[in-house]
Image (cartoon, rainbow, N blue to C red):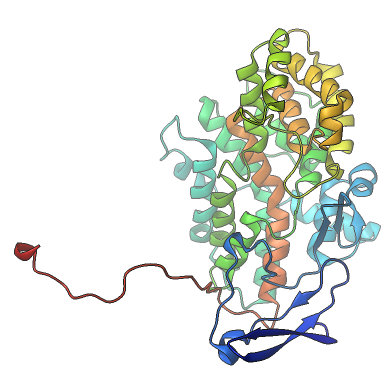
Length: 431
């Protein structure tokens, strides 16, 4: 925690309370209200915590107005262009880019821990065959604590390290198995000769009946999707992981909680919602109709995948992913896929129409990731599990940071109570 250099004065009921202030490396200054209740007997009120810093962190920084996303100080566009997912994982986990030897060791550890306990196959088969892959992932990741007892003690730094590697290594296998189970195909074991993204695609799309070769363009696009979704500061699912971990819960339970939160359509379902919107539009000929609806302030219809709640300028992740989207669509072709044709025409309009330009409604990362995953052949039900796979390293990094923080306390938000005052119980025959 930095030193307090100045203070803010809160005045009410004839009293004045001095509150310390902190100056961050970047971003707004912060008023420290930790002792407000003890000193003044009042709470603050901030639904959604949109103006409240719940922690201090060195992992990720976002400036939504300027369209900036930094991981440990490195711009996301540089990482997506010049790095790859496992190197970004190392950066998020340990705070610095690895040397060549450190990266080789890290990649070896992750690659050689991708298999899951064989008895977990039986756990998968306990789900209904039509279970949503996210439901399966929530259950299986939470159940990892029943299979890996030697890495659940959060007070042991070595066990935290083991759990971190296991979660990052095994999440692609779990996600791929959830997909295979949902379509009735046999599970495919991971291969140590493939990189992280190629291995995931192999586990999803290969079958015993024929050889499957992963196209390097698809593997690169998938690696970029993973990289661009790796962490995003104190969002809803990350805050959920931190809140769960504040109780001392084991890491697998904490990450399962994050997956459950990500499942919400307002959080992790944006790229799925984008594809569902394309299905609603139905054909390229109907695009002008929906563009007019989007411009009509009295029409509840909104174009999904355009603009962003955090980024008031362009989404810095979208520019990089657009390149991969173009490469994937050139490889796979769009002529036979009406949804992808609609997506390309919508993109063209949004990048040239004054209405979209003035309101900064540019295609965001969810728009491009959705059309890439559609082109690859993933059903929309797999979009959020892939998001969870990518975000695992961010959750784990934030979890490790919090566990090591000597200031950590169990999360306990307050409330503005508006219910009944105390009243006496009335026997049922007298009501």
